[in-house]
Image (tube, rainbow, N blue to C red; front, side, top):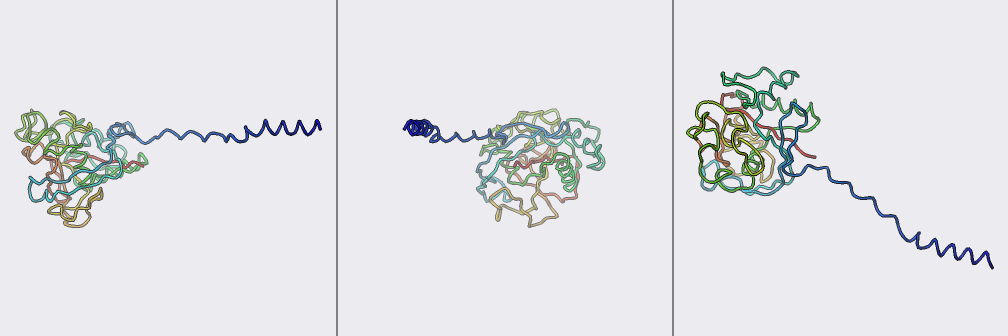
Amino acid sequence: MIRLFVFILAAAVATPAAAQAPAPPAAPEPTFPKPGTVFRDCPACPEMVVVPPGIFIMGSAKGEKHEKPTKPVRIAKAFAIGKYEVTFDEWEACVREVGCGAVPNDHGWGKGRRPVMNVEFDTAKQYTRWLTKKTGHVYRLPSEAEWEYAARAGTTSEFPWGDTMEPNRANCRECGTEWSGAKTAPVGSFPPNAWGLHDFNGNVWEWTEDCWNPDHEGATGNTQPRVSGECHFRVMRGGSWYYFGRLSRSSYRFKNAAEVKSYNIGFRVLRDLQ
């Protein structure tokens, strides 16, 4: 009888403890970079800025024919894009590690923090392949849609600051700077857009991944580049020190043969985020 009582008592004490299942482990803190995060994957790598996903209207109803029709574009995932155009310093790091060919001509303007120029389309892609191999992360040229999304930084105006070019906002012809119409400026010489990105307007034209098409008809509506069309020409964006400010509008498109290199053509890189 005493043994039975002890058994029942022990069971009664044990039951509540058994009923309380252990708490599930706490979910790990997300390691995915937050929008606006600035990072480098290596000391010689470009500074990158995380851009949030979203939807924007690509093109301009007020622009030229090749900027039309306007198209809604969905950016499904965050990505990181160069805070600046790729510089001579960054290019020279690639040359030292035999990932890139010779250092391009700087025309006596100086290298260092100035944007690398005289870079043709395939040579720019060579640099992205070197970064990919060096860091283990996928670097590439931005698609036209990704480029314009980052350039606009949430705005719908012609420029990130408004609808007209203003003095000392960008390095372009007759734009009121010490470099305008003369040569490149060191990257970051002008205020950034709302997402902390510099020099999307002026300084050097920037290669994108897209084949040239004369307008936005048939545009993908997402981040994928257009891989059909006049693929011996590639889309460039952003204007340059040599061209008037109206050509540096966020929506303006320009084409050039992929093998062309010039003192007003450079690029910036994009990194996919897993």
